[in-house]
Image (cartoon, rainbow over all chains, first blue to last red; front, side):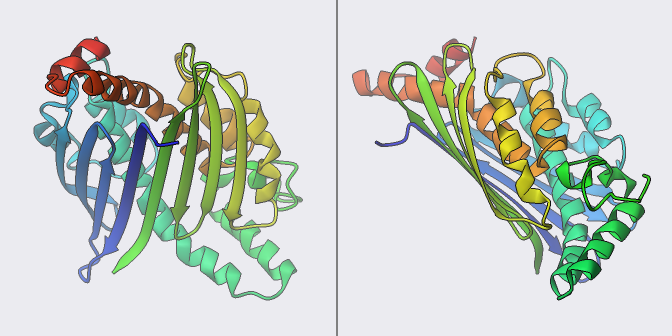
Length: 163
Length: 138
């Protein structure tokens, strides 16, 4: 059976020598082609620059994507981002594609910083040590509490943590 | 260098009886997930879901696989469906399963449009594609 629709999406974080994160988000499918590029400054995770380009069949509300994306310049990746981005890019006349691109890029930035901690755990041969590492991780990142099955109250990782 | 990268691939097969089968793959430097959803086109209802967790971070993660079944019966056309997927599949199971299911869901309308355009072009290769899509989306 041949396909009638295929979507490819990629988001990449490049850590530049000056410490700035260059985020490249791209989407291509049978009907749409879109690209968003962000420059994110540490330590505040502020979006310094934002660019967007949408091609192929462009939804009416995304016609001015390259200007509209400038609305996110100056905001920081952190708590409340979903609401802020929805206010700047979403709504009935908003461009949902741009909103998704910025939120997925922000998520990738967070995962970029999560990766080294995960790698530390992988190098530990002892299961008890790994469990302690995950417990320390959740203690230092309250956003993880009840964020998934591993950090629900019943999980062995959460045992005796009282978070 | 690239310090984190994620790819999502969603394909849509149009089966018989008004059903689309989505295959969704999410692969990144930390996680690897795959889902297969069968969805009724008319009302967007998820008829079945299967999932495979290929790379994950801790021993509790695979317990999220049975949680996927809570997606059956949910409509991808109802208001707030994506928030519901994140709450029921993501928070109670695995956020990364939820992410790829949401991407499959976002593809529903696009896949139907793409399928219609494909059929229309096979009948009339000179069709104004932009006009066709604007009319279909209205």
